[in-house]
Image (cartoon, rainbow, N blue to C red; front, side, top):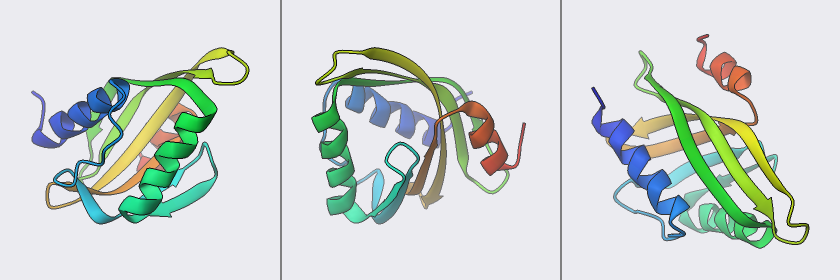
Length: 129
């Protein structure tokens, strides 16, 4: 059975993969924090998260997310394990990379997002295996 939060994230990833770069203000808290392992930076609020999206679009011709597994954690967080398929804009080089996401919520809106460059790091951060 899929939870409301899992459906929310599925919809956000689907929008992302379709090229929609508008922040869904009903799904993302205005003070949400994104910790990106890919850029080794932290972004807070809509403007900075938008800057993160712009940086990805500048560097990559394609950046598609897929979720293979999701787990609701006892603290209300959501752990996602999947893949990112991307192609460098300048190089044209294409990669498939494991990725993990740990998401925290404020009510039904995402308040914190962490991505990890492999599944084990995401599992470790979530305190599960």
